[in-house]
Image (cartoon, rainbow, N blue to C red; front, side, top):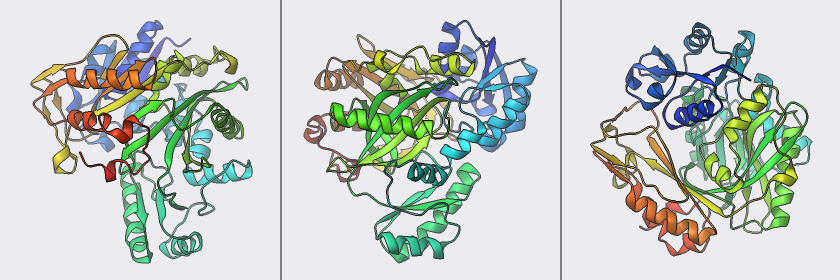
Length: 446
């Protein structure tokens, strides 16, 4: 087992990883930017290293500085969290070259499955259903326009190395396609240092369902059930839950086995997520694979009782998975609300600033993953998510009621948050009855 792990991230996911490492008796090293010198993850780790100024390109995306920090502190492994360099194949390869175990898939696997256009090709070859679209990367607008006309509008333009809704636009006609194609390329280059994009048919009003998988280097692969991530705004997820009200046991098994087939096709190792779109007739289509841990992994942990970060670390150290498919039983229902520092009334504008008072909810079946605290100043340079509120209930109704109670207890003063908006969603009739899809928030009247 590893002796010391560098956590190459910030905020709540860095705190999350550090906590599991401590439980496993593993020392940790936190990296932080100059803007994060008062961040909680820095103080929870056994050691910390400042790697640069506030701008991500000069700090959390600064590969040489991060590698040097890991070497200087004698780390034998590195956990990338999510976002930043977590799906950067070059980074994963360089870690291995320098004798630092990357806790995640290999650079080759990240390249194959993290690149959405290539992953799509792999799925087609392995007969996993995919959304109609381009065969791979589309390098210029003329080629893309031809694809769009062939498959029919609306279409969605996506960054090949993307995530979090960046580098993604829906086009309804030729004029919109020309405009958005250039925008997506520019945003993809800025966010991921990769301007490549691809084109897909836009499935109207689908459910966004994803399957968590775990795979070891001995050929063992399991799926840990599904998460429904349909409550999202501009492709940014806001509320996630497990299991989905849409799937029955047969469809769950069918999709779970398709997820395993997708991972097995490339010899995938470590944690990953296969994302699907499910239409109104319960037809499902492969959308993409995330070759990292997901923001919403806690809902899966609640309904399975499995610490996914611990399994990641164990697998990366060369151990076998501690479970097999027959061991996995879904119990109860879990919901996660992303708590963002943003002004909902001003089109969800990020709201950095100093937290004057902070009180996290508690009680049975309530979990808060956060790096925020009273007096903490939220910097303007990073994502606006400051906490994840996760609850578990015996069934979905129980979980909804517990989440409403917990949201009502959550106090964050000094900055605007989306807590009240989350409560309005949970109180809506359509959400309670499970009558929602990815268009829910755009049509929602609070």
